[in-house]
Amino acid sequence: MSGLRRNKSAHLGAVAAESYPGAENDAPLIARTSSEVERLRSVVAQLMHTAAHDPLTGLLTRKLLLERLDEELARDAADGSKIAVLFVDLDNFKLVNDSLGHGSGDEVLSEMARRLSGCIGSDDTASRFGGDEMVVLHPRATDGSEVALGTRILTALAEPVFVSGKEVVVSASVGVALCTPGMKSAAQLLREADTALYAAKDRGRARLEPFSDELYERAEKRMQIESDLRAALREQQLFVEYQPQVRLRDGRVVGVEALVRWKHPKFGIVPPADFIPVAEDCGLIIGIGRLVLQKSCRQLADWTKLTPGRSLAMTVNVSPRQLSDPAFFTELRQVLADTGIDPTALCLEITESAMMSAPAEVIRLLDQITQLGIYIAIDDFGTEHSSLSRLRDMPAEVLKIDRSFVDGLGSETGDTAIVSSILSLAYAMGKHTIAEGVEKREQAALLLRMGCEVAQGYFFSRPVAAEQIPPLLTGALWQARSPRTQHSAPLTEAQVRRGHRYFIDEFLDHIGAPMGTKAPGAS
Image (cartoon, rainbow, N blue to C red; front, side, top):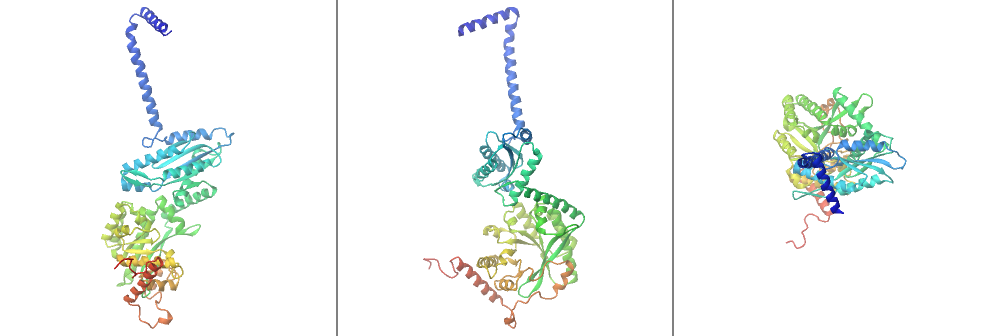
């Protein structure tokens, strides 16, 4: 049979040659044309694939995902399934790029995309939305399958990644939004998933958050705060109050902390906890920080003229966003030049979490700042479990003991031990200490006996307007001695050290290693 086919083909070829003189010479041309068409088809297919997929991760592009999402939202909802969108974002991915370089960051991102692809089903679509953001379309969500999918993604992405011989752990946060086909637009569903993702980040990261009406209300409030805060900067609604910092041994005011306040034209005073995080997120904290630094330094210059010969320190909070601003150092030097204040009278306060995670360029900047004579303080100290070796290398001269520990002084053994250990650490490393949140006389007295130098809190004074500070500089805000010991001499340095040693002993005894005991077998 095959022979008949060959003969038939040969016969047809002969007929063609007879019918079209020279046709036998066109055969190679026809073959080449066919090959060229196939090659062009392959090139077009490759170009279409490249256009549809992210070159780094291999995931679909944002454009393709949006098209598929629109198609799913337009489909019939008769089967009862819903459409879910999962917004996935890697936590602290910038630290990977900053510490290991962008090449290693690309490796991590590619691996995370591969793992995410391994979690999704055949009906699902994964895309790279931009940066380290990925979006998964789960078009047939039933019985909580979208939450199960998000949980699988969290687990897969939490596993360590080995890059250049180093183990890197990068967690992820996931926001989930759900709807029935035809009920919402693609833009609205993605916005809701993004809102849920923001909530996951805000609530600690490495978690999944489903969208809810509560989150919507919070997002609306946040957007309103951001809008009003921009107006507040333009219309000078922000002002600064100052909380005195008291030297415990004599009750004298030795410094003040500058605290920004916002008087909203409709709602009155807005708590800092309501607007500072929003300012951090949207970048407005740079303008707010600049305003506070300028106002507080000018105010310090005015107080210095009013009380010549009286030294007073000014503590100003600085955010990580400010330290990352290339113009910050230049602006800081300009403020010193404009106000003429002594740089050693200025202390910049940075939270412990920001300090401990600061990249190398920020540490270099802090070194430059200290070379100007300005002090650096670590705020909220004790809340982030700092690495001692990291702390040793930090250009910080002041540790501010967090109010959460001061609150339990004398009543909570754990808090007393923590404050004692912080003071011991500060003493050993030659650093100054300021205790925050002192609200009772007993706390102030105990801090003094433990060796703390300076404290602030409502017991001494609430934050007040600038004009209320000068009268506080003339006397003592408290008497360190109780009525029973008011005729006793002030505590000597040796007595303070003995009292400090007592609390260190108490702390070590609490953990089973009282000072002075020898290890088994020691001589």
